[in-house]
Length: 120
Image (cartoon, rainbow, N blue to C red):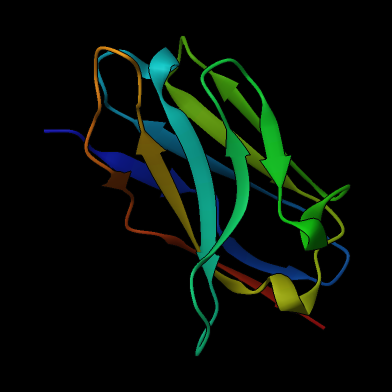
């Protein structure tokens, strides 16, 4: 059974940094697109950052220049480096993994989430 596990959340002051990690126990990690989503209280879940199987990345506008997503296929992990954190970054952050190739489509795999709280 596939597991997606996030770690690295916590409490940090405004302007500080955190590094989130996502580990996915899929068979061929390199074919998966990995996303980081977040959901703040009373708000919809939103896509924060994405890294595709070929290493292409994209970011939600409010985090561009502050967040960096990267992957290590050998370790089957994706990291989200978050710098210059703001109180509005406070949310539960979720990792999502999915594979879509010409030969295979995976289910959507979600982690349980990790809380990030940024104090002002």
